[in-house]
Length: 137
Image 1 (cartoon, rainbow, N blue to C red):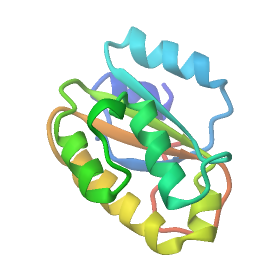
Image 2: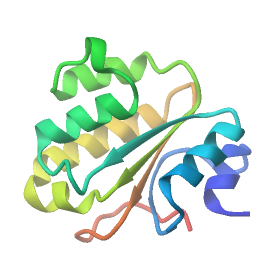
Image 3: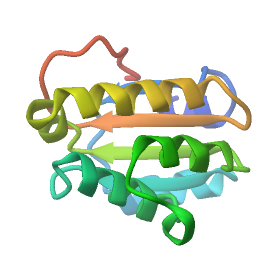
């Protein structure tokens, strides 16, 4: 059973993980939805600075209507997530390299939210600088 499947089945804690899976985003979206979870996708390859990253998170989690591009707004919107959710952050490395402070704050925000109910996890996929985030697979 893959790491993601274990999370979705409740056999592994949710959290923020590096993930080395190469399945297409649509297949991951389908698997997450089939398990009854919500899915958000962040394309970090094309959203490489703080503001565009925050916009991509808002779009990926359907926060657009009441979201402001800042971390306080992200925290508030994440508190409103009402169903178990997995976010796939493809290409986290560019933000980590270009704006280490924004990347660090994003990890802190996601990690804090992962410790709350309902379940919330973030999968960092792709290469980037060394970070102390556990690997899921």
